[in-house]
Image (cartoon, rainbow, N blue to C red):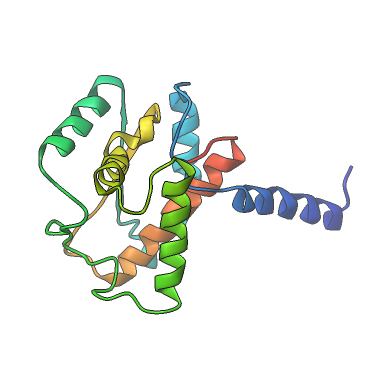
Length: 176
C-alpha cells in the first residue's frame, strides 16, 4: 500500500505525463475509439471549473458517414481561414508583434517543413490547412459550440473544458 505522500507523487507524475506528452496531432490511425471511452473523457472533462456551474459548452460527437458529410459540407462552403470573414470572434490580433510573431513563424515553418511544404507553397499550405475540416482523418470528430450570447467568462470556462478533454484523452493513450 502506498503512503499518502507516495500516492500524491505517483498521481502527480501521471497527470504531468499526460500534460507534457500532449501535442496537436495532424495524422491519426484509423482505429475507432469506443463510445464508452468517449463518454468517459467527456464526463471527466465536464468537471472543468465553470462560473455558477453554467457549463456553457455543447459537444457533438461525429463518426463515419456523418463526419464525412459534415467535412464535405464545410470544405464545399468556401470557408477559408485566411479571409476570416466567418470569424465572429477574432482569435488573432490584426497585426502580429513580437514575441508572438516570431513564435508563430517558427511554429508554421516547423509544421509545414516537417511535411515538405516550403514557405512559398501557398496552395499546399491551404490544402494542409483544409485538413482541419476533415479532422486530420481522426476516426472521431468532436464539434464544440457555445451560445453566442454568452460573454468572455464562458469562453474561459470552455477553454478549461477543452484542456480537460485533451488531458483525459492523453490519460487513455489518445491524442487530440
